[in-house]
Length: 382
Image (cartoon, rainbow, N blue to C red):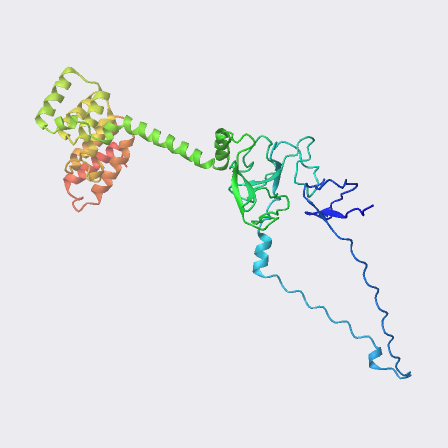
């Protein structure tokens, strides 16, 4: 009767073959081939050590008999900058393993070296997945029916050996770029799931982008709102921003005066007269504006008198559209009428003009003194 062969797993000799039948040539744990091994030969018996020669007995103590002093331990070296930077780098997560046949199978109860799915009646090969964009993304939170990265929603890639695609990646560590079996380079192939088709995740990707970059959409919406408001304001006030085409007709003084005269003859309210006067002033048509402002004052608009006083006020100049050559008497006259008509804003204009007249070189002249007294009487004797 022949001796029974001694066999071990070619992948991992530690696998327990148990009561394996002689005709089975595959490891029941990982599926690798079995190899025959010779029983180890017994080690040779060690020779007895030679007896040391006895030294002559001497009662005097020798220095060799005292044990040597314990050497001092060297002080630990401070960590270098490179090692400190390496410690700061985040560790890569463990590679994700899934069943190639059915990624939804639970493989948590598999053996450490098993390359097949432990799910009953499956036997699918275990493959290794990682994020195509960033290796630091953890795939442990991935749902079984999702074939994208749970952190960035980018596609997943599968690692295969460039020499033999059937080599298992079970023993591959995080960040390792070589096959754990043969040492050849690894290839990264996009993983599309068992059906071979990528599932659409456009809405989820859009929602993730909004969560990550919410400031950009809010800024864009705010910009659109601001531009819309500005457009509305410009359209509503385009006549004051860009002079309308009717200004071309107002350049002819005689034509403009005839049109205003007819308008005054038909009758016009104080508000309409003031509004029409402002339009003529914006088109630099002063003579028709003066007629309209006079009619507005006659109809009870004290603000029209203030506008007339500002057209001749020497202290304003180019600050007023349609400003005429300075004429202090006419300016004082219209400011006084505005104050007496109840326009409180004209009081400050009249005080400014009176102060200006007092600081003029000819302030002692009878004409100037008369203007100053008229302004002070209107202001209440100040």
